[in-house]
Length: 144
Image 1 (cartoon, one colour):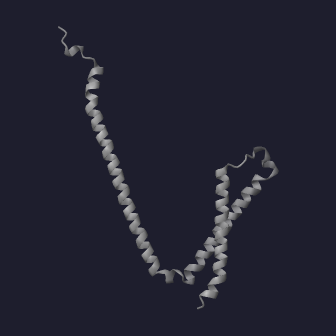
Image 2 (cartoon, rainbow, N blue to C red):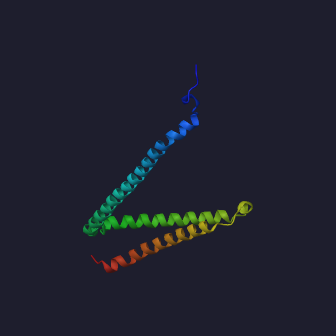
Image 3 (cartoon, rainbow, N blue to C red):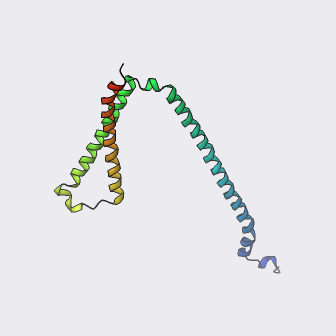
């Protein structure tokens, strides 16, 4: 059997010849997926804006019902309980960290941990302050 020129073409050369259309096709698919992803994000953000707007309108209309004692008092109690539980957890973590049995494994807190602790403490104290302020001022301002 005689050897022809087509028999002498290596598989590498065939791969290189066919990679150009493949690269073009994969590039087009990648660009298409980017456009589709951007479109999905824009559609989702538009519907989120719609829900926020509708929620604001509903909140404005129903503000008097949400301000009723039957809603206001349980919300204040849950908020105060959550803030107190958070403060209890922070205190327990501080107490456990400073025990003599934990001194050998105690590492200095990172800046991120300190920041997180400060924000959590501030949020809990602020929540309790607002609950106490609401409990004091509500009977004074909103006389039934």
